Length: 282
Image 1 (cartoon, rainbow, N blue to C red):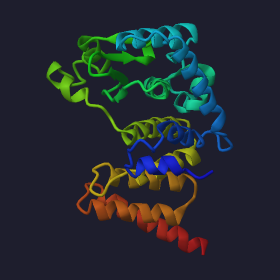
Image 2 (image 1 turned 60 degrees about the vertical axis):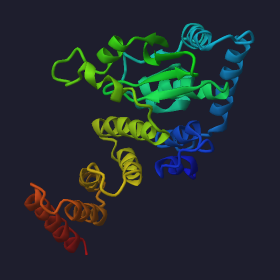
Image 3 (image 1 turned 90 degrees about the vertical axis):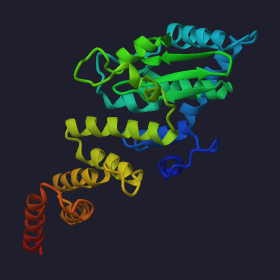
């Protein structure tokens, strides 16, 4: 299926017409190629409408945060998947809604999309090691952790979630203001893509890993320091799938971006090896 919204997000089109829910569901077609998006959108609409019914006497943001927590995480039972964190289904919004479990970023997207349908101001916050959301209507603000029951979290708890309890993480209280920056739709999608990439590589699912890499490279800017390593990794995926010409092209792109790379000689040897292999095939 065409990945219209996903491509828009990766092209940094971040306006109100660019739908995060549709982009993330298009991302799920990597795992589910025949996925029909509309049923999941209908289910999101139903959940939002049911929460809206509970807000008929809505007074303030604090009430929304509490009623959203009670409905989504207590009544419906959404929760973090701590027992199988690296299941790729945790990154597929259709499965997050069906199974009512996921990882921090996918549960945050679910919450954000329910809130958006109710015109509630909820924003994504991409911490190191974790993902939370912020409700902020100008009068009341709260940081919320959908992975741990949708409860508001304090600044101290946020630091711990980001790795502040680990002396090797480098997370210190002075970093808190920068960590609480609101992220864009593109940053959310790229984070989900990286999660899927790691899972597929760990499972040696090379075709799906390659799909994620193609999208990560599509979403990279010129001059992005991660672009050269992305080409190098994609070349390895191409080799696993016997895509020799594509692997050579990616290695050449890597050296073009990193002409003084420490592994330049090794990359040149790989390119030469691919040349020889292609010559034998011809």
